[in-house]
Length: 393
Image (cartoon, rainbow, N blue to C red; front, top):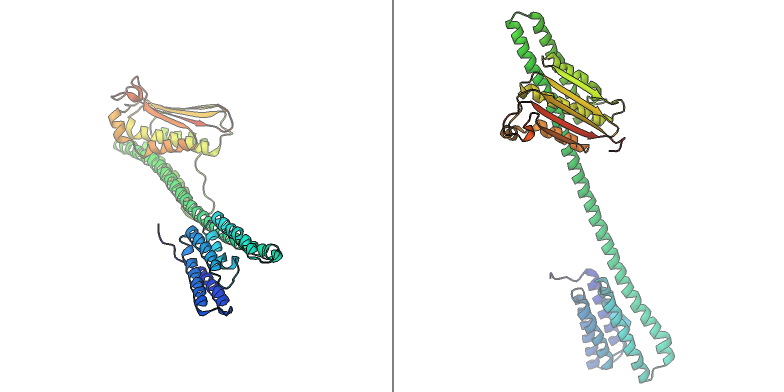
């Protein structure tokens, strides 16, 4: 246990106690030997106060014994509470209120009968000095306990303030991380889909030029221009979140832009069937945006990997949930290839849906399903389910 050094207050109390007892000895006109003994007691009582912070209970007992010894030796009177008041205060401040009260009460219980036996006036001993001594002892014990409680309260308030600052820092870091992931998903979804469309349309345009079909080449270039412009608008809106002076930002694409997304893929030469059942007018914006991004990522993966000839997008909206399914008739994917290729797209899709309490399932749509070891013959399937707050499951 580390040593507890005496404080400046302890030194002041020790000096005051020494001066009190020494003054009583100096003004009593006692014999030199008795005065020297009184000075020794004064020094001892002062030194004990300097040790009280480290050993409060032992010092209490030794001080009480010393005061009794002082009076047994018939040294000049200095009262009972005054010599022990400093020790009672420090002990209470150190959290030893019970021992301090017991020692103080015991001193009174011993000294009062002793003085009455010696023949002191009962009216003075019991009526005046007992009350004043008891009040002084109670006052210093209460003062020490109050100081300890206030110190503990300040320490607790400081601890809570530090914890609150740390919590704010952690929350700020969490929000920064969440915003970073959100921006990463937005950039991936936007650019990934656009680059897939541009790659497909550039291949269509190249074939059209080789076959001397300028109109088809112009249509492909127009589709590339449209995809690039849409991507730039979404990218500006996403990067605008990093600017404090960005002003009004374009809202994220929602469910109402799903036909536009599908038309863009159709323009690239991949037939896409879009089937929507249910009322979409009251969809929460965040649900609509999430559904758009899931379909966008699923179509991007079809353009990149599936070698499909047709894609079906089915959306079912009920009061309780929105479920969507994207199924292609491409080559599917093997389990090993899926483990290798699991990347930002499917991960970001799952993160988006999980934030709304939904689920995503993906895998081969053929007889082997998601667990098939080889590539499926029925293409690939993505199924997402998003709960709606307006309904009950």
